[in-house]
Image (cartoon, rainbow, N blue to C red; front, side, top):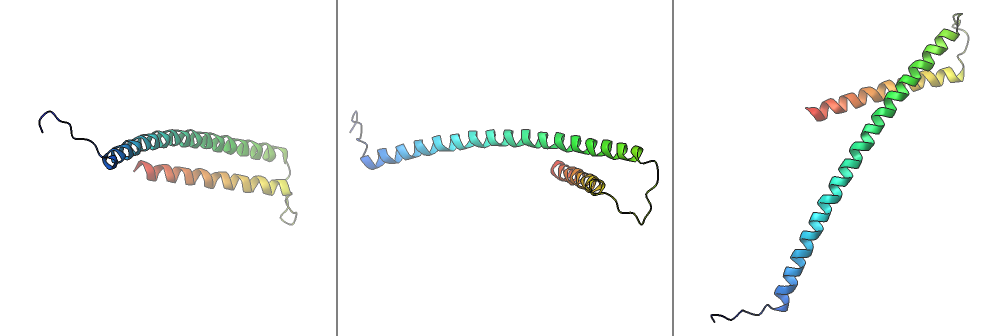
Length: 109
């Protein structure tokens, strides 16, 4: 018995091969997950930038619109469709910003 190496059966070698393959797959999954997480962070950052730009643009357009209208609009008169869109966009941006702030506060806690 001493000095002799027991021969590995085909079943044992197959088991070792499957274990090694599983470890490789696990390492690849971890690497892909980290890459995906980094890409999600970049996308989130870009979305925040776009949200800030949209908010600024809506504020600028609203300000320019307010400056352009010197007379007050009577209540019986209908507002134009683009004014309604601007007001709606301003509301959406405000709500989206608040949602993002609440989400960030929740994740930081």
